[in-house]
Length: 106
Image (tube, rainbow, N blue to C red; front, side, top):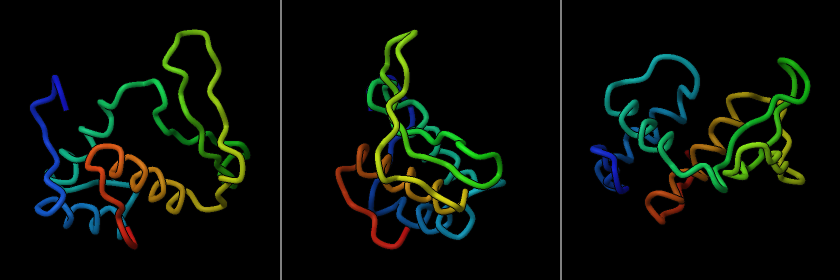
């Protein structure tokens, strides 16, 4: 990823995807934190995010417009009742965006 000192190697970093699967919310190892830092630096346009639609009960997948003042776009049919599952789904989407590979079971 241009402009970032961090890189993701899909083979070497797959262990961090597994770590995230086990513990998507909370403290993470330095290796997983590096992977998350790469994800956080993705361009804003089209970036997948979570929107809390019912506090502590429901989240929905959305994409950012990348333009100041333009609203986010909710992704139809992508509603979650578990924050952990929502976070795992965003992780899988971002992993694919960065590596071009689909994570299985992460």
